[in-house]
Amino acid sequence: MSSSIVSTPAPFNEAIGAYAPGSAERASLKARLAALMDQQLDIPVAIGEREIHTGRLAESRPPHDHGHLLGRYHEAGEKEVALAIESSASVKNHWSSMNWEDRAAIFLKAADLLAGPYRDEINAATMLCQSKTVFQAEIDAACELVDFWRFNVHFMEQLYAVQPESADGMWNTMDYRPLEGFVFAVSPFNFTSIAGNLPTAPAIMGNTVLWKPSSTQTYSAWVIMKVLHEAGLPAGVISFLPGKGAEIGGPVLASPDLAGIHFTGSTQTFRHLWRSVGENIDRYHSYPRLVGETGGKNFVFAHPSAHVQSLVTALVRGAFEYQGQKCSAVSRAFIPASLWDEVISGMQEQMSRIEMGSPLEFNNFVCAVIDKKAYDKISGYIAHVKNSDDHRILAGGECDDSQGYFISPTLVEADSPRAKLMCEEIFGPILAVHRYADQRMDETLAEVDKASPYALTGAIFCRDRAEINRMSTALRFAAGNFYINDKPTGAVVGQQPFGGGRASGTNDKAGSIYNLVRWMSPRVIKETFAPPLDFPYPHMDED
Ligand code: NAD
Image: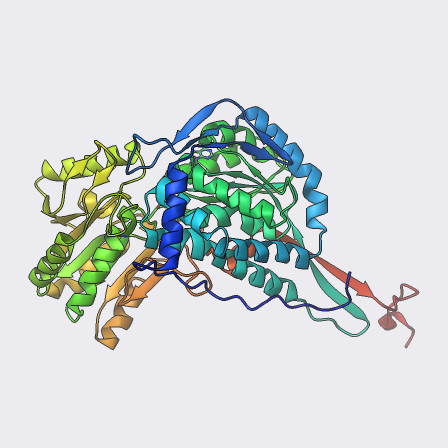
């Protein structure tokens, strides 16, 4: 107990390690990778103080080496969901009435543990479990999750500091209560940082959380749980429920105590969750907050004044890093006829230098796609291109799943902005490009805006200031994160809060104060110092 008005440390973005040949950080990470390859983890369900081995086992295997077993995890089901709801209710009072500074300290400590002693482990787990290169793992699993924890603490403090005016004789205050009940966090496979942020953003605000990680990310998700417990997060604040979506989602969504959903994943799954909430609406004690960041069909639009080399590099990095499995990955590009030959030959040249293989070999730029289901879906698009008249492969197009789920970076020309590969989310290393006539700029911008139902990220490349403004206005609602002369991936917490509209989500901007606002229900308190002692007002007196 202390008498002070404290400030939390100023947040800063975690510096990205280079892992250059000969560096100590590279040697240390390689040792950790070797150790993880040498052991098989047995990952439990974690509820309150208990680690539960349900015996319903599923496997974690590296997507680039599916013959190797990394470990097994125990799947939760209806019984574990009931236990988790009970456990969450039992710890709720303790957690929500804890001083906010103490909650802050737990997450700041978690950030430092992840940036330091757990950095190798979270990076190695992410490289093996999700087939990320060392750079992709470092910017995600280590740096971005550290950033989420440091910045969310800072945003919590900023929010709590917002207080109403008080007129003479009274004191008005806001009590930023957490939601009543629990929050259901459902995370995707593709970012370890998002997996860590979805349960912890509501928890920082004093909520208790049931967390269902993605089946293909359970291995690195478990490292996050270890960090949080070591940082002092009380048992029961976050229940860890790996398993099948429907088996966990069904009973969770039927609970009267559901206070909110914090989701990232496909549009289809989020719509299913939203629909289930609608069907169950009469059961709930409160109206659940629904926050979901979902699919995308992210664009790059090149103006005839674009700088070709930077455009080409942005397309290659934006479309193919992490095998095109970033929610923000470029998936369709519009190139003016006047630049077409130069852009396509530039891309073919850069793509011919891309090496693909295991993330254990650090020279690889592209690794495997996440699992067999994704491999079948993405290779199905390549098969469609090969059999269609309105698409043509310009580079790549090879698929091989004999050792891992490998699909080579693929460039496809599409005749129409409405062609299949220009409109549907593929979520793999395929970039569809459309050649537009320079004089049809306005019509083409209208197609960028309307041809796909999504509105997550987008970029324009242009060196003419007046044209930049015109294009930015035409595409104002086409992307929640909009880039000028840069690739549309790589948003940084605290710098480019992330999220999109339309079919891409509720746009509650992960990594910003706007997201944290959703996890509280303010109470306004008015205290009057000298209350009136009788009911009549002055106007009621005799003249
Ligand atoms: P997904 O929808 O298949 O799965 C997401 C999560 O939902 C997983 O944990 C899954 O098990 C769970 N789930 C599925 N059915 C469920 C149910 N009935 N009840 C409860 N949970 C259920 O998505 P994914 O393949 O893991 O991720 C890829 C998708 O995520 C892409 O569409 C991508 O665009 C999107 N994404 C969006 C953002 C963003 O910020 N907009 C970020 C990352 C990923």
